[in-house]
Length: 333
Image (cartoon, rainbow, N blue to C red; front, side, top):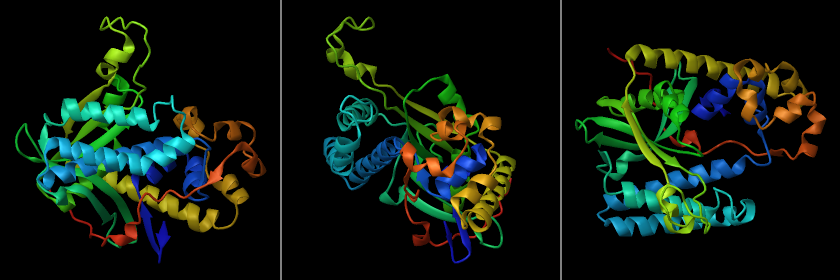
């Protein structure tokens, strides 16, 4: 988003541009998305908001079961209609499966968290922080939780992350994850005592529900299905001042690249965007899971986009203009 000369950019936009300039331009300048892209985004958003409801209820003094009940009611109201209209009942992202996974998370993890959330002010902290001294380029986002770690009592950022599969590749991704680095950088501005971040990993896979015998538990799958839910708390991780500063410099470069795409390229027409946005996906390896890979393979013709089911939908999870912009803070080693 560019508003009154100020460039607002979040991790999703930056990561898209870093993976492929053409993908980033199509998704975040022309606002085109694939026909099946919305379900993972909506399910992930609903999960975050549902967990926020749960922690808010706890902070207000409600007991564990009351917090669960309120959060599930929120999930059903927020995600139910979308799921019914756009997600197959047998899909891992169907409302019933998402609800069951969350219920199991509450049962296993809710009363044995590795951190403490002290107040509602530490839940879903929106931020907008300058990336440079001018204030022209602004990084924005929402921190899921600001908490204290049970390990040493120090302040950490907790990020809820859902995935189709928790495995070693997914675990290792957090060592250098740019969103976690950026949120840690932003969190230091909000609370200079923050020492790291922790990942609350929730595997949103399809829980088995057949009468076939499970080889692991010796029961029909429909009797042991909840045992197949998978959750992990990873971290806390930390970042050095040098790593945080490098992230800021590179985020600033991506913000300027985004500005160029919007102002100099995307403001003209889609054909110009396709012609001038660098197609770096084949070099970075990001084509494998890209929603536009068939379109690119067919020659990147703008006229083909409507016929392939692509739709126009802006990526604005929330409006950063609602937040006061925090000045750039120099980090001290």
